[in-house]
Amino acid sequence: MSREAADNTDGPLRPRRSGPLRGICCVPGDKSISHRALLFGALTDGVVEITGLGVGGDNVSTARALAALGVPVSLDGANARVMGVGISGLRQAAESLDCGNSGTTIRLMSGLLAGQPFVSTLYGDASLTRRPMGRLARPLREMGATIEGRGDPSRPNDIFPPLQVRGGNLHGIRYNLPVASAQLKSALVLAGLFAKGTTEITEPGLSRDHTERMLRHLGAPLHADPARRSVRVEPDGWNGRLRAGPLQVPGDISSGAFMMVAALLVPGSDVTIENLGLNPTRTGVIDALRAMGAELEVQITGDAMGEPVGTVRARASALKGARIAGDLALRSIDEIPILAVAAAMAEGPSQFSDLHELRIKESDRIASIGRELSRAGVAVADAPDGFTVEGAGANRRVKGGRAQADHDHRIAMAAAILGLCGEEETEVPTEDIGTSFPTFARTLRALGASL
Ligand code: S3P
Image: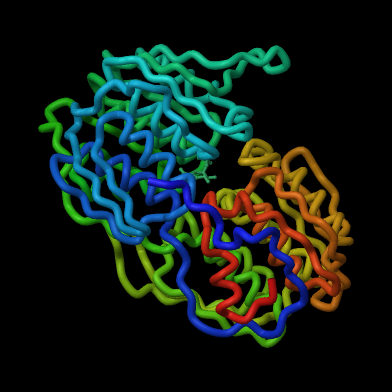
């Protein structure tokens, strides 16, 4: 089980103005759904064959942590085989669990481990070590778990990794999440499966609902009420079994978004992305790009485990500025870096707000986006919860130079797509791209991009 490096291992990418991008492509399996397929597969009562698994480092972190907890997992590219150990079959790990760069791994794993009658320690890389865990620890403690983390005198009300989770003997709670977050919601759902009594979680906005869809598919006692933005777990009276079976992961719309924007911005392009997950809690990027005037054709072609799957065709389009806020911001939370690039090449200003959460992703994305757009000569003004981009249209002069990725895969890939519009060459570090999209450069080159 190796953490795959980005396919461009011979140094940085060097994007520059490209000829048209044309053709059909696929992107790796959805990172969020892949984490869940591995984690929930581990709790089933038999063999789970996963196809289309995300091949990035984050998903490997989840697979490794499960293996350390006694779950037989084998990875073979986009195929995985998980021998489910049942709902009570996890064993205390001999070592601390390395969650790498992955916020989803540490948070979902903490929820799962809060339900186990043993002690676990979870840690990660420098970026993960800076991400706040107090909002996760508070409800898990309320359910009966003991969670300890590293303190930071400058933020006395929070804790940070490494985390120590002492689980077992949980009881259900009713909890209103302070922010819409699928990682928090999913952690509490997992803990709720091991609790006495009902757990009900309500969020201020509807975050991605892959956990709800997949756990229902596997037979968990879970009721989702999207209209009330709440989910209820009722383990009392449940037979404690999740049904093993094949799981198919669709392509990651968050990776597909880079291909869409590349096609929209490079004159003459026409790109079709196949087998893409099109869950409505994730399609904000399509709605945002359409609001900017993008020519995007979307076709739903099927369904995988309750997740709509389809095709998106993107053709070069003249974009105009737009406002990305509220529910649209939540539904495109991971695509804001690439939407900011689209905004830079649109006519007129774009305003991005309600994005406090971007400050605590793999990097402070508001700061990273601002710095990278400024480097390229794009005027951008920061706000505490977002930023404004001064779009200057498709003919604007994009400067080259050396991009910095801040150990954030999406910042590196957004800088590379902006570089495709540049008159000068941009140098983009590749070492973080493998977190979610190791085949990024290869896929773009096959479509005709110069990088
Ligand atoms: C994810 C949820 C989102 C998202 C992250 C993946 C998930 O984070 O930004 O990349 O798989 O549940 P939050 O839950 O913190 O909003």
